[in-house]
Length: 125
Image 1 (tube, one colour):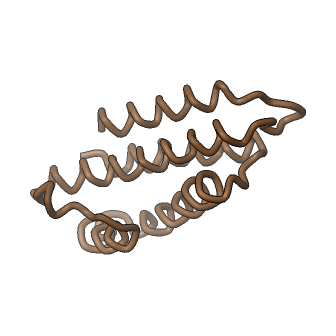
Image 2 (cartoon, helix red, strand yellow):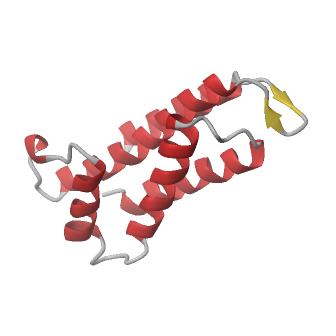
Image 3 (cartoon, helix red, strand yellow):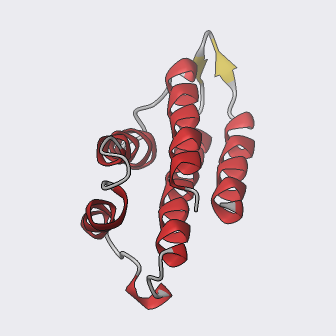
């Protein structure tokens, strides 16, 4: 969990550099970078969990579909909501936040970061 939380902290630091005007980020670039890094934190948490369960580093997922499969195989047994939470974080942080640069509302970004931290805590070995 240490590595994933380090990534999440880095994401928060990137986000803190984004100027805010009236509850919206005025510059989307640092928000995109922060969302991308926060999403990587989620992936790192899953990787850390899988390694703790005996998955070899060479066999870690290489795609979002691979992460879905691994979640189904190793984690859903313990918490059926994890796949839905992962999908929400994938769509919010990775697609809307990083890839498309659509997250401009400060409160919305805070919610995604909070949810990323909760997810990381849930999958921590």
